[in-house]
Length: 130
Image (cartoon, rainbow, N blue to C red; front, side, top):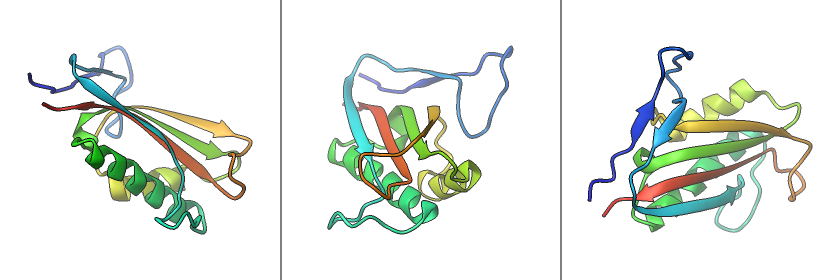
């Protein structure tokens, strides 16, 4: 089975080079990546939005790799940013790790996260190629 995703970019909607308006995912096994914080392998929370975002994205990629998939198979990302942080700085940091893999994305502003000091949390849904 081929697990190629199809991006939906209707002409009636704004075209964005960083994300797609929707994704059709083929019937396949799916991995749901739980919310990843900007913590290293010891559980230490990194300092600042850029460092936390880069690490959170690396953590997402690590979970994907453990399921034998990668960013090209992600059909949905959700990024939770603490209110008041510079969202543009967060996007720039995320792209350093994520690259140009377009997917459906939702960004949510939150009052805070369960872990004090966490500025960003990222989760993902991806198909697993056969």
